[in-house]
Length: 468
View 1: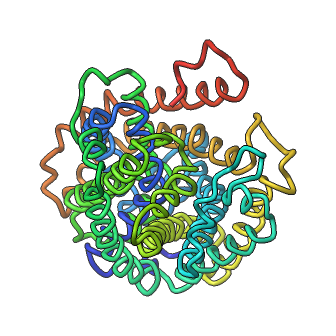
View 2: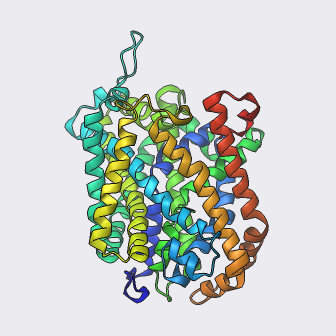
């Protein structure tokens, strides 16, 4: 694909909202509150903000500038930058990661659609059905056990994603982001205000916002680092791809600050939506449930409220907007790679991407029922794909990017690209983090994530310290 014929964002705000949309996703809505509750509340939030303002800022700048400088998606960006054959592995990792993520992400998006529909239909009482003593499954477990129903909602979500992709950069991604992200902010504010004003919710607010340094531990740092890494869409090929659509007069430095601030704001709002509500409902019990927090604990909270149905509709609409903007960003990276490397037209690339999503996503959807006996590393198929991409491939891809900039492109080149349109006030911080901090941090994330999964799957006691 000719660099001169690539799609472009029509404005700086288009890039900011699209990049923010890629960063703000399901991880912000349930993973951030769950980790914050598990690792110290306010102290976790403080550590996360510091890491996002330093390490996260550095990686966003690096990937965005690399994309704008080369006008290529990840694989082409590495080639254009002069990477050798071995180092080009990083470009392919950046390209393969979204191909593997967007299918199982779409499955979870299907879950969100199912719950949203249930609330719209007025069936909220069913959603709060927990597993009972006689062994009857909860509503969520029943839904996971239905392969046919999961496939239907997953495919609908995938169609929504690819319809936006099919429309292109300006008419699809940028236009939807300009509509979806403001709606998401408004819904966040409404839900957060309602949550923090419930009787008993203030204890949750204090726990989440006020740092208690006695709660700090090494695992607080590692968990916050992992969440920051995944939340900001680092090493998914997205920022390189979106950077390649960025015009030369768009301020990379200011845009990066805005994306990081927007993502952090939504994460904080998510914490204020969920943690105080769970405290108000049952004193904070089950706040650390992880994925089931959104699909089990939160429906119970809404069912206890006077306006539970309305809040359920608002909340799951919010989650849907967050999920769709992230899935669109992931799918766009795949389509862009096909356009650049295989010289396909956008329509063909979009159709092939949709087929890949449906095929791979079906494995994840059926991993809870028909294929429940297929458990690599003692994980269901969705969790295995999540482990493979998030815990192994993404840290490796980010390490390759850092090496590419430090050894091949050189920091000066990236700085020059940024300063074409930016003052780059934090240039000194950028240099220090990239040279001395980024790679050690990434190695810590890689080792802790792998060891944590091995410890939990196989009960290896010696590795339990690494579980995040």
